[in-house]
Amino acid sequence: TGNIPFNETSPYQIVRIFESPEFGRFLALNNMVMCTERDEFHYHEMIVHPVMQVHADPKRVLVIGGGDGGTVREVLKYPVEKVTMVEIDEAVVRASREFLPTMSCEFNNPKLDLRIADGIQYVKEIEEASFDIIIVDGSDPVGPAEGLFTADFYRNCMRALRPEGLLVTQGESPLFQEKAFTELNQCLKKIFGREQVRTLLFYAPSYPSGMWSHQVAVKGNINPAKDFSVEKARLFTKEKKLKYYSEKIHTAAFELPGFVKTMLKETDQAK
Ligand code: SAM
Image 1 (cartoon, protein in one colour):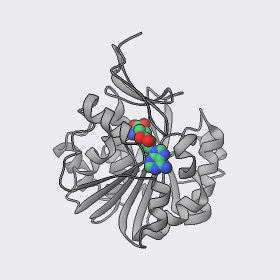
Image 2 (cartoon, helix red, strand yellow):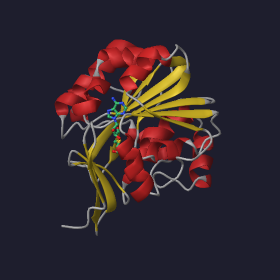
Image 3 (cartoon, rainbow, N blue to C red):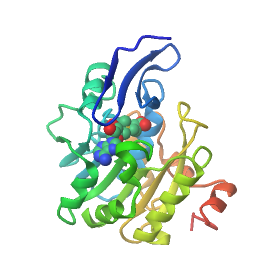
Image 4 (cartoon, protein in one colour):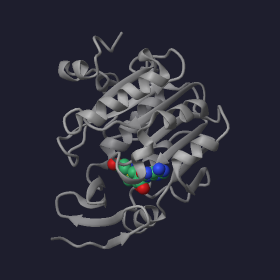
């Protein structure tokens, strides 16, 4: 097999960096591929830009997890006041700093407040209405990330959101883990409201099945699939040279195949 430049067992998980001719370097946690140099932008652009384009003026952003840095890299393309990133495992941050420079490139940005802590605990203690956007960039619901898929956690996230705030979470896959995908969707709907939760799909070649989701919950009555400035999104996409997200992908990503709508017990999302 290829080279393994980083291989540590942290108190939370096995943290490894592999090198592959196909995908470049990639991060694996407990031998699950998290992000590869070649295609991480699919996931990171699609977890950040839909919600950041919908919100009128996002100033305070919270990222839970996101240890590789790809998510905060995308968030810091906006004129935010501050991004707080709460990652439980310093070994992931260290591995990314050392071996994934294209993802960890914003770790020294003065607008970033990077904390090594448990995101579950953090949202319990944070005062209400602290953030415009919350991004849950967690691993799969096993090990330290298990608690990132509970009603308690999302109730605390909702409390931490300002009015008109948006939450987006890595939403698992309708093909690969139907149970986790549907349970997370139902959990979010119970807390934010049936009409306040929408699912977007995107291609994730290095993930099992390649069909992946992010789930978006809004505080208020906005429709994240439609309520954004197409012109602003078009200009932003061009100016920042985005490679996956665009103003057209934004709306298309929220259109679900029939079998996924049935799975989520939704008739027609794009009202
Ligand atoms: N950005 C990645 C990708 O593109 O697939 C997503 C995975 S990211 C590496 C997931 C991160 O969530 C890991 O670094 C993991 O340590 C972190 N994490 C898991 N449970 C956590 C918790 N309870 N609080 C904070 N971070 C957590």
